[in-house]
Image 1 (cartoon, one colour):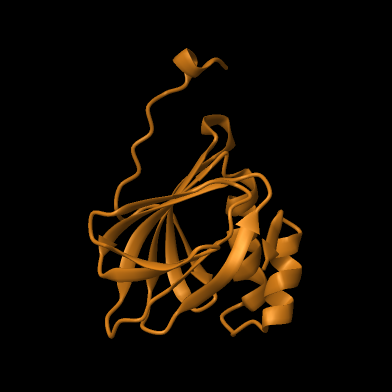
Image 2 (tube, rainbow, N blue to C red; image 1 turned 45 degrees about the vertical axis):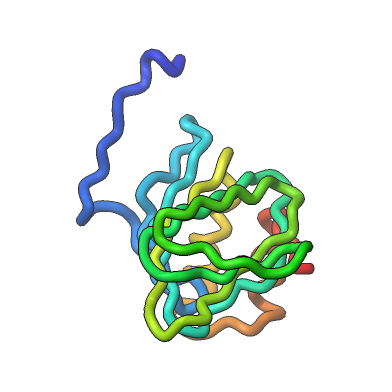
Length: 149
């Protein structure tokens, strides 16, 4: 099917896949290999952190919807607030942390996104509602081209 033959996709707010990613909910809005795109709404509670890491194949971007997110990178830390956009190309070191007393909500956008979509699903399956150790998290993510730094 060529791009011109693919139908438009509209996903209602109550539709989609809900995953638990290391204790934070992620509502998958689109995970379409044909579109080379993964989009999810991620809500992180106070104190939540994803340590610095890099993706082998996926570019990643965050669009902050609500709150203030501390972004971790090879050059140090910066903050992003509602309306800010962060582009994190594959191979770049990045992570994030919620240093506030409120939830932070943001869109996670990955392209081509196939590895990210499967990695998030696998993290949810392996955890089965329980916390994962850093070792287990690293073992799962390494299967999908993500290396913690």
